[in-house]
Image 1: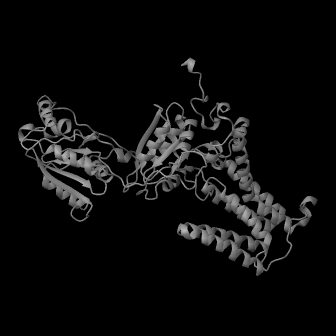
Image 2: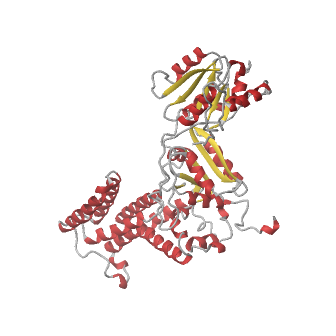
Image 3: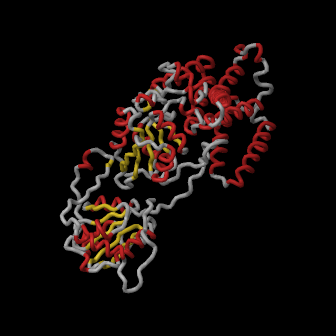
Length: 542
């Protein structure tokens, strides 16, 4: 993904010397021959044990180097493992790379330049000459550790080995297969940007950097997984983020001990948050660069994981999960209205069915104004059975729509809504009211911005329905209280999950209920403990 300058496009005529090579020769005669090797250290998750491992030396002859590649990476067995052996200036070299990752134009340009070398151009320190003068790459480094070299090449880089040397050159000429930045399907907006994250981490961090041209923005890269060596990037604004929070997140990621992260961010979340069987999400995911940029400016930490288009935003609260970017793309009044409608939908998805069920089995609880609520006609199945079957049916339809080709999804929805629902009512399996209130609850679930929170709310609804069927009013009250206590006691990276309701923060809660105009929202959230509370500092004091 790195852009390389390829130099002049004009090639010398046959028998002529490349002017760039002539310049290199002049510089090589005056080059440093005894400079210290350049070592680049990568952070590896898994504790201090990995950091203290002794480096594995690189063989100092070509035959041993090729043999080691055959034994370890399957050279000559795996078709995508390529070793291009050539001789430049009388020096045997081998370019080792993975076929699908190599950036052909950059590597071809480098090899073309090296063909002009003459044996007299190289001193006894050939590696120094190649590194300082003859390899025209933007990102080139020396490496003497075999394991680090292998990780770099398997991550998409290329290694240039020279016979007789115990170090080699790593050339960052990567070309990852990737799709274009498209608008994420789960976070669509009417107004706003249409770009979204992709599966390549370098593209994702660049999309955020484009929106945050802040010199304090930091990207720390770690590698997680003994086999996958997955790149994990911790993003934060250095003079805003709480350093204790940052250190906690960094330590949790470094302490992860897994073979790998083939499922990327979800496995990393389970390995760091360690929430067990708690259904409520303690991490917010987003595929929108603008959403991540806003949270970074508030003091959150964003975690990018290579091979996934979603980014983890840490820490999070329950009320963070029920906000959407669309609210901030409209005027404050319309944004507040949309937020209230969404809140009502979420409330309906949780309590509409259990409360209707409670009023149905205990009509004395209904106020006079709600006399119309209740069964007009009994069905063949008990109400609780109808609710459970309807819940499972909605989930089954949702999963079927995911696995159905897009042109057929609409047709399948019509079949489900018209045929299945209508016939189920006419045959007496379901009653009309169950279909009605189940539909409203399902709409409220789909209106929840966080997909994970919508699924968790469905579990809560099922628990409330079972509690009402078993113990009526006491069951509803006890189940609701127990779930609320669980939410209050939950913490996301040592931050209260129900903030700003508990602990109570009037200003924070006011900003949740009302979408404030930009110029009125001058402070960052208290629960993040940012270093700078003021979003609009007085520039005159700087």
